[in-house]
Image (tube, rainbow, N blue to C red; front, side, top):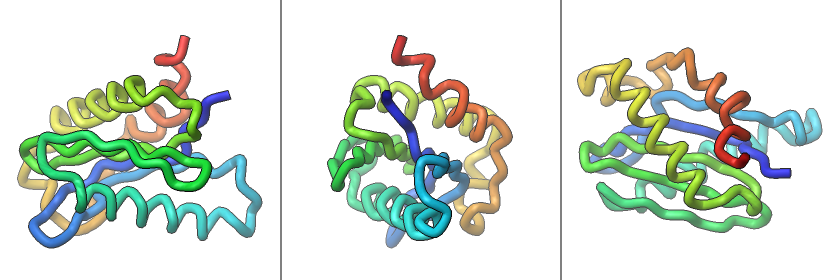
Length: 136
């Protein structure tokens, strides 16, 4: 069964990427593993966003996970971490949809603020409900 673990929207500044909003599904990990897994996923999505050039998409395999990142030309980025079975094309389609929804709700002036300052209500819904809609 395909699984999404992490979904994040980031803003790529000149020196680093700032996480604006994220959601995690850590239910398949043990209680004592969850904090380190969450930290690993946040770190991976941030580092890969920093290394991705604007208007580009990348997919990187790390251990049993795939991290898909899309950075738009305006430096707004999204990252999703899934298992290896999740199709790459579907993951990038999900990232495009997330960024469209996010940019429709929030103006560019709110993107460069403090990390995780932006609250995106539909984010958890997208991670938990829509993750299997693209697979059928």
